[in-house]
Amino acid sequence: MQRWRGLEDIPEDWGRSVVTIGSYDGVHRGHQLIIGRAVERARELGVPAVVVTFDPHPSEVVRPGSHPPLLAPHHRRAELMAELGVDALLILPFTAEFSRLAPADFVVKVLVDKLHARVVVEGPNFRFGHKAAGDVTLLAELGGPYDYEVELVDLFVSGEAGGGAPFSSTLTRRLVAEGDVAGAAEILGRPHRVEGVVVRGAQRGRELGFPTANVETLPHTAIPADGVYAGWLHADGERMPAAISVGTNPQFDGTTRTVEAYAIDRVGLDLYGQHVAVDFLAFVRGQQTFDSIDGLLVAIADDVKRCQEILGRS
Image (cartoon, rainbow, N blue to C red; front, side, top):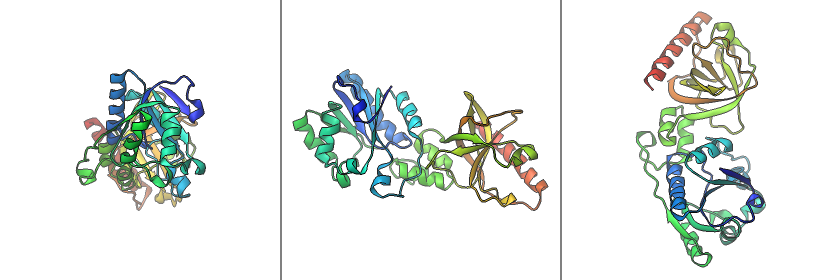
């Protein structure tokens, strides 16, 4: 898959294409429907499928300080889009100047002059241009004079976790923040993932016999609610069963919120300085304090056992 950063990276000889535009944070099941249809149409027409997205998130430019927690960094989104068959990913730097583009100017500048869109595939709530003034009706109206067609994809409705709401990144972020990682996975189509570099912490886990990888998460990462989770630790090309702790470590009067993953039954694992990923599969319990270190050790051993059972069933 080709990856472009800005309009100037698009090859001068780029021909017609099928395009879809959006933040696509998380590339959840609703996004997969839209992107999948764009890829399907591209194959039918014999042209490339292109996804257009933005960095930083538009809300941070329009309303500074409002950057939402991210369900997936751009490199992870690119991996997921490539798996769906996308041929090219265009990341547009979202600036104050860019945010002021009128909807029609956005269409000409991006879809017509650079990507030569043949078909544009979107969800019914797609908005674009200055103050989100453009909608799918306007997008379709502009398709006549600019020789592209618009196809809309209805989003499926999520199940019990979402209360019957359409698949959305906003809903997924809420579920993650509440610790409902199983509900988030239902929308994402896979476990929620947190990434970062393993850094040295207080090393109390090592002293207690449960050494953890202390993950310095990427900026704006959507981190689940404080507690213990069953999941997977991805490192060195390997997926390892893990018991994951999120929180401030109140047992030792901690104040910094951390994500720590214990690779179950792994001895001598040295991951310092490595970029790793942690997948959250299931919530085990909330964050607690105990009357003694012995009480803490009993709880950790029980956590690990429960995580093994959950991961064994998955």
